[in-house]
Length: 470
Image 1 (cartoon, rainbow, N blue to C red):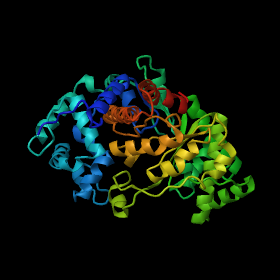
Image 2 (cartoon, one colour):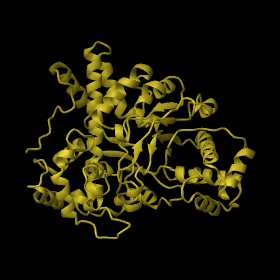
Image 3 (tube, rainbow, N blue to C red):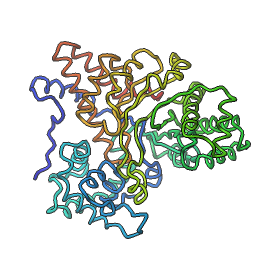
Image 4 (cartoon, rainbow, N blue to C red):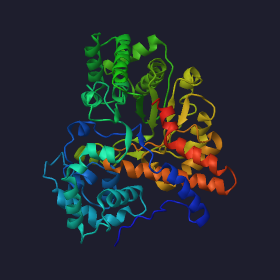
């Protein structure tokens, strides 16, 4: 079976709208990639070592890929993921690739299948669909490419035309890779750290007390001092800003902001360190720290992004056997309006404070996020994320938010990926879909073609620069 990319893929079916979508897309096709939220390890760009093998690159760490094979009854150890219980050897890379190729049909119609096809065809020149019969040949084609200097991370960074790439980092990270890249005259891109403090703000997080102690040790303050804890967090944020960070990212089960006075917060903080907080009290303290984080953003300028609504490690058996990030994180219902009102009451009308709200519950876009962004100067609509960064979901997103908030209250696309080689395919998908959506509006007489062209360029370029203060 041939792998042939339709040059008009994702464009509308009717010829007139498709032709217009193609013309709009051509205006943005070759613009630089701005990736203000993702999970690529910056060390790969510092070390610039060759990628190991196709299985490691495309399967082992990509839970988008492994979860569907697990759903089909394939043990994760066959996909190269170590069994922490048994310690048995995992499948060899070529065996992993064969398993993947035999099950390629599982990805038909999925976002993962779309990205993989695009990557195989455009980056590696592969012109056949993976299958049991050609698994070894395709593996060897990719491996030969990976063994060349043209496929080292820095060469690909330049080839992909990436201008800005943000990573996601622990607050106590030294940021040495970022510092090395910034100081390297041979590297021209911007690789920015992102402050991700979840495990330091939520007393229910594993090891929270140890992380508080690490903050105190760095800050030279008493472990049990709530004031010292806040000062240390602010200090680490400043360190990130000094090293190029533009945003602080908050991954929470539910977005909740709670306004406590200092005495109440200090009391809960002390109880948390003593291990005496109830679940409800932990949620209240974490909610207070989300509001405190917003206050800090108004002071240090870091854009505040909120990524809520994912039940992490839903399968206890899988977590205990294979660990986190192995495909069993599941979306839950998300609500913003009441939960975030204390934060917006304080900072929502502050135009210098940027708050980007994401969701994997697409019902919240038209009901809550778009109306909030359509009023509060601080609020921006985060791009479709995780389970929703897929062709049909992206189009539903545009329809859900545009009529209420327009195009200029959105963040621009984010790829949110650890899979470095998929970045171009993901951004290209977003550019094609926005072109398709705008073409429909033009054909329906709702906007003119010149306006559509300007919006399309702004969604790729000026909006992410503005929202993420680039």
